[in-house]
Length: 256
Ligand SMILES: Nc1ncnc2c1ncn2[C@@H]1O[C@H](COP(=O)(O)OP(=O)(O)O)[C@@H](O)[C@H]1O
Ligand SMILES: [Mg+2]
Image (cartoon, rainbow, N blue to C red; front, side, top):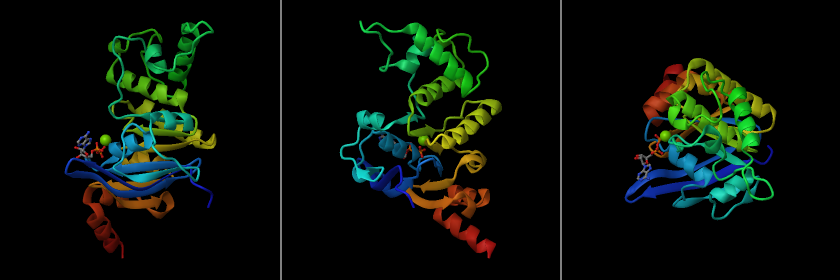
């Protein structure tokens, strides 16, 4: 097997007395789409934040393309080409869509002035191509004027524009309509064709099953299942998410 793009090893996260991640290890291959599944509170978002370098793990190691990276932080993951759509993605309501997308990464000229026209054009393009959201009139529109689904599309557009090697999506479709959701899932398949990996965190096991090559199920901070799509079913994933390790055992017993 080729060297994985990303490998996390023995990740543990404690908040005070609570262990929210317990010795979690897994890999993401190159051009692989991985589903990260589990009930509320399982630790998915915490894991996403650790992989993205915005939260420090209490213990654990991070390998990128086989090389161990110490002191992972957002600067480092940005350099590696990791982009994340966080579940609680913060947008600035009183700023335009374009300013939100390029926040902290503005395109400027030699004098340091922002190239607004160029950024507006890119914004219009990304919003149009990936999540075809109805009703966004202009990249200059203020985020405060957007619906929940439109705002989610902006958060998606931002990550999509800057991603280079790994796109992590934490419940990206919660506010999206069916058509926009399908467009996003199609896009993940397209990315795979372009050699970009993605991690899809979702409650919708049918979405995950439709698009992911492999599924990781979390339960109370532990990884309880890590299977390739061809070795599992939506029913087994459901049993794992709903019933934990015991659910998987019962499901497999029932199959015999
Ligand atoms: N900043 C924090 N401080 C304390 N506890 C936290 C913090 N973030 C998450 N947790 C706890 O960690 C557990 C896992 O949360 P989370 O990673 O958001 O799960 P999921 O995304 O799977 O729903 C929950 O019990 C949550 O309350
Ligand atoms: Mg979450």
